[in-house]
Image (cartoon, helix red, strand yellow):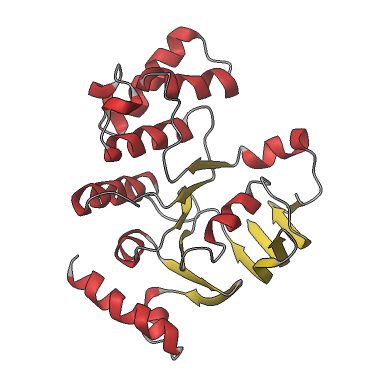
Length: 252
């Protein structure tokens, strides 16, 4: 369980990013956080991981308040999550095999022989084993995202995966393929499945993968509900989103 209690954060003490935000999320949920640029969507992911600390309020992961933990104390909480960054964040000097193997070496006690097997299993699962010897610069945008997902899963079995704009900058077909991967990795029934939080401004992608939608506006969560509730919202600004939802669903 993730729980935000009255979380407030301002950058440089003058730009309010999150204003008294509270919500709960179970690890098995499929959540899309929507909103415009600079509205604090990615900041929520960073707060979950303890990469930034709120100015006030508390953040609980599995009942533990992480807001005042040291870096070493945060490790156990962070190991409950895998994160896929917007740009993939692959190591440019390492090929695909070494990028994925790096996390196994850092966060597990597997032998090199076991790591070899597990790297290939992950890459095969994501349909990119043929790229095992390629460098990041030799990969398409979609392939880079798949490698980033593989690396995020290496070294731990997450309770939840965090995706930061996982389909941004990709062509529609490639974005659709990434959405399919996200859905596959979260297959199964709650509470046993691995859930996710995906931060995105692309409503069409959110509709394809998520079951719960949160809309962030002016530092607050302006909406939190399922697709039916979002479609029928009375909020004038969210009605614009509703039009986009209808268009997105017609394309499914």
